[in-house]
Length: 140
Image 1 (cartoon, rainbow, N blue to C red):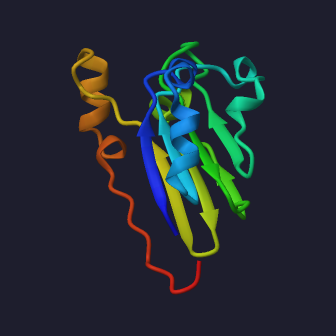
Image 2 (image 1 turned 30 degrees about the vertical axis):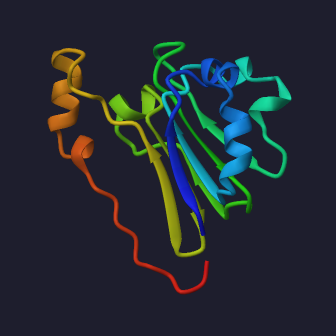
Image 3 (image 1 turned 180 degrees about the horizontal axis):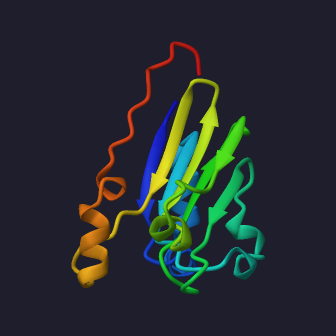
């Protein structure tokens, strides 16, 4: 299974710069996107739902056009989770997880810590510095 990640710095801007043409060449089974910077209702153009992919977005709910993550998958996941249960990440659209049997793939956008006191404290908290481990599965 080929899994790739991409910081879009705005999915609409990335689209205008050739992201979706690049994506077609990657032959990825799962694509994790960070910093989509849009609301899903702004992504009605079919280009934001590439052929052959199941597309899942998690938008910021408190700051429109801020952060946001997505996952594109060739195989439909068994489950998609869009919350950690921690408001600073959930409200800013920083977490989405696709589950495929015993495998979980997470697109996580962690604050850089350079934006001010709040993001520094988020990064320093236990939830902001978690590393996600999964037990390898022999069949995916």
